[in-house]
Length: 342
Image 1: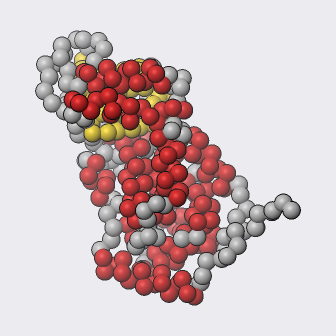
Image 2 (image 1 turned 180 degrees about the vertical axis):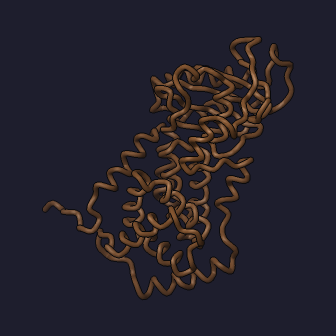
């Protein structure tokens, strides 16, 4: 979870709006943002483009769908931009907020607050959908205590969703071709094991590169990318690597998954992309989660784990439950074949 604000300030819409870019990883435009709040912590952050009038009900259902496991938590809705209005009496997209309020009620997640603002920038005015006349000003999102804590934790906030998406743009085709040739060679010289174990050398390789990612100042070489991509192409090595999505080196691991998502050719790119999706979701970043899932499925259509994770998210599996899967991976001995009953 992401610590948001002290309890006494949880209902301050200006502070909440200023936190949104850091929770998403980018400044949203023409968006509806849904925060799931548990004991003053943000358990989940979801964002979707504002819909045309005829699609409000469908969007509300889609946005609330992952909250099936959040009964008893609270929700905050922030609508950013999206058309004209006459604040404070007539706010843009008030009918959408009504649809979300009803969908959240059915899901058992009360709507604590719903506000509209033109943008998540310093000095923008915000208005409360449910308390006409209540308004305020957004503080500088880059100067809040939450921004400082986010930066200290290694988070970067981008100016737009497109800028965040650029982080996942594959490397140039010529680099990917070189790595494909190296992977083809590794497939011959180091074939994947035919039993249900993970080679210790692969576990050690991934662990070492996770630790190194926190301090490494240069990009991975072609050979390093190929070695890691080959190791992760073993589904068991990939599953074992979920362990790095939690613990003291989770941020370094996420940096490695992100770099490999750019650096690996298809279909090997799918494996670091799915690890990136798990990592992002564990820390509550829904936007990066779904971007990474899209990359995994584009790289390897029908990817089993990507499909399972997407289904789990749409049926309400919480970040806490995903974290438990990673902790289970950390507690598993992947170098010993599983016992079979006779």
